Image 1 (cartoon, rainbow, N blue to C red):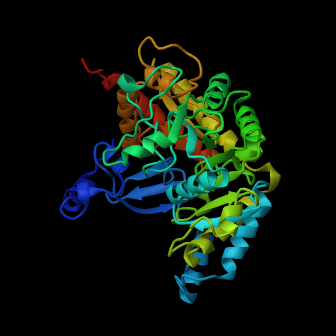
Image 2 (cartoon, one colour):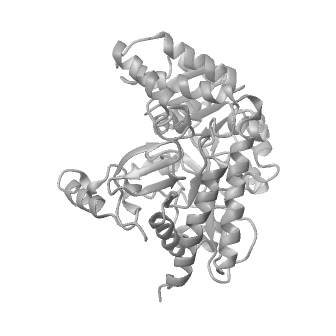
Image 3 (spheres, rainbow, N blue to C red):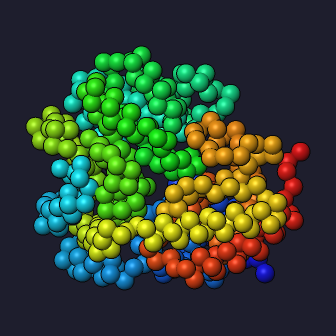
Length: 447
């Protein structure tokens, strides 16, 4: 029997009397039939206030690499809470966490902490501009770098305002943005090294940094094509730009050395969030000593009352130790589980003639739903995704999955935790079979 959500409905109605729009992050309102309210979680399992059980592949937007409510992390936070929750000063814990990041990520010669990756992005852009004396940041269409004025330029450009292939539009999806911010960016298409090279040459000597998600996880799940990352590194070295790798999602999920180890590149600055804190509000800016020089000199203001909060540091220390303890084999087993789930979902879709085409490296992947008549093959960039992905049909299937107890992110991303097992994937596919059958029988495209 499909799940029902009466208690969540009641709480959402109540929330709208005190919380603007009833939610504290806009994307949460996308969840259908209602933004859910949760009671508890354990490992890959989650229970909502109506008592529904989910196999969770949303995992706190990917932050919960170690699953829900890991006992060791709870103990670490609890022990620190008894000593102090906030000092606005230094503790040995911050050195211990920074040293762990140094030992794991080869490009992390120095580290600074913040409370969210959005803050780290702003710090990285400020640092790059001071380092180079240039104003422009080059970013890729569809890449997400936090919700602030600078982070979302070129993120969700509507097709009618894309601009031509050679010059993607510099737009922001939110009202209220400082207009001049848009002029501080160059937007280019992802996974086209030749196009990137042309745009860098066009603005040569004006660009402070190139920022990117090494795997584009916020718009579909797009791995870099051959030569993409090498071209970024080459151009940065040639023109004295900083290479900023936004590993908010890929950091530590792709191994101790993160996506930089997985794909074999070295950034000047790295943005770390989500898995580094295991669900606590914690993020880090890591970089080479040369790239961090303006912080060392004091020419750059980088501040924050809650930076290096001891509760978050205790959680992060525990999280990083989990990755280190798994050794060089990590994340092979986690990746294999994800790939098995992707293969199983695709097979179930074929049985019911549903155009579901999961893509991604397995550690994280996207449930692409092809539009009628759309071509087959991997989606490579933002425009290709918008043109081929059937978002309304995915939303319908996503609700069917939710009502059978399989939870993925509304935009189509699935994440695998270190606590998922073969049995969990088997059970997820059993539930998905029912969901896909219901979807196939009940889907009616809009007329």
